[in-house]
Image 1 (cartoon, rainbow, N blue to C red):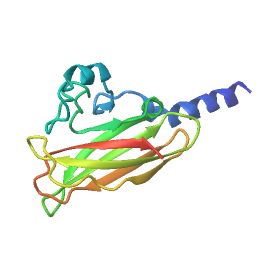
Image 2 (image 1 turned 135 degrees about the horizontal axis):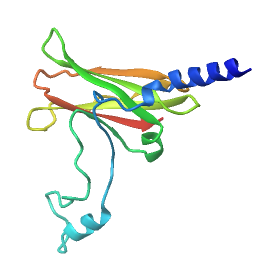
Image 3 (image 1 turned 180 degrees about the vertical axis):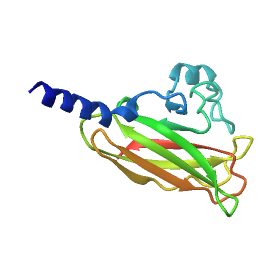
Length: 159
């Protein structure tokens, strides 16, 4: 009985091993909006042609996964994030995601590729479904179309 219990605990620990923090893991971020900053910076005289929301959205880290949902942020961990140069001179981004819950989940992902100055080099990719088994992992991969891609951010959202 004791050995069966220890075996079950060991299996659970191995299935959730991807949820442990590793020094090589890159950041994941939760989108946060500050409506007080938006109100403070809003023009009093009417509509404007330029952005007035400076400081109202926390900067999005480059080369990271951005999650718009707090529950998702506490359920999924980016276990590995990398880029590879393709033979055509473009960039392929790969994110290995770990489901840290005991239930399977469907999420969706898309990527924005940016140049060295953080400006978009192409349109944001289409949303693609990613299935994460309970306590398991899945891989999201996407390639840029532009050879000018130097940075990226991946958006992850509930399906």
